[in-house]
Amino acid sequence: MEIRQEIKRRAADIEARIAPFLPQEKGFQQTVLDAMEYSVFAGGKRLRPMLMEASYQMFDGTNPAIDDFMAAIEMIHTYSLIHDDLPAMDNDEYRRGKKTTHAVYGEAMAILAGDALLNYAFETVAAALTRNEGDWRIVRAFSVLAQKAGIYGMIGGQVVDVESEKTGQTIDRNRLDFIYRLKTGALIEASLMIGAILAGADEVSVARMQEAGAKLGLAFQIQDDLLNLVGTKEAANKDFRTDITEGKRTLVAVHALSDERHHDEVEAILSSGTDDPAQLARAVEIFQETDSIDYAHTYALDLTAKAKAAIENVELDPHARELFLSMADFFVERLN
Image 1 (cartoon, rainbow, N blue to C red):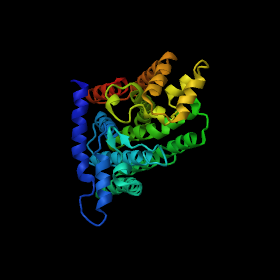
Image 2 (tube, helix red, strand yellow):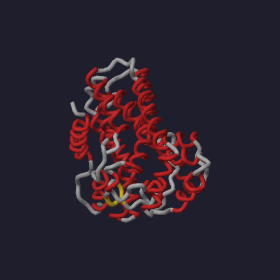
Image 3 (tube, rainbow, N blue to C red):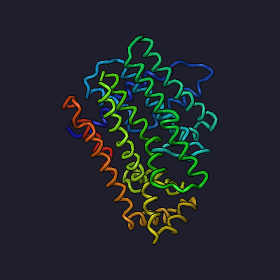
Image 4 (cartoon, rainbow, N blue to C red):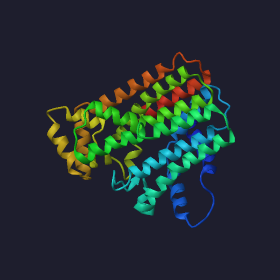
């Protein structure tokens, strides 16, 4: 099996399965419904629902509520991106080469579209609970989804990220790991945990999936940071190297700033807000000279290995396990 093609096939399948969960009716609020649909289908890897389904399959799941939760977690992820792109946060006009939601529908409607997706995600899983009254697996999965999306999960990580950027706080490795673990890792943890929970896995196995998700979440965020700097496909997009322009203290940047020879120059570029291609290229050159890119990539690979080790002794469907391990490697190793 060629993993790239299998992931592409699964992403298309997931899109087709989550589409019916979005509101279909027409009404006076049509603009926000259009903004919701635009945002959900503006591209993306469908990583979170894909990992949820992979976890579910590893435990031989047969619970029909899996589709509801796959749709819900993609709605929550999409709402977080809408809000992340807003002028009050990252102020991004493009994401994945396409106009962001606020650039198309305006800032107020983007806020409402994000709010609507978050709320509708929980309407979706509440409907699954109503259809399957008394199913403890859905109740437990509901709880995990709420916690990992909230102040002890994704939102908590976003709070620290925003405060660090807006107040100029120094970001050390501990703070950076906290941001990555919650802002990105929390929904990855939720994906693997919910898949296992809905399949009826025991608590020890769910804990192992949570551990794997925590490691993979860090690895995936680091890899996304690298793709923003050196990804061959991303280079064609208007949001290429925007992490430098926005002055983000990614793991790569933090590592480079620790090198006294280049600290002042890196700090000056990151603080300037420049989008000059020559300055962006110079920053990447420094990242390479300080081995910061190699350091980050090696760390991501190490995290992936630890994630795979976390589930090594869990009894899983062998075919589904192999697919999951291949997916984990692919998402961390890709640079094109």
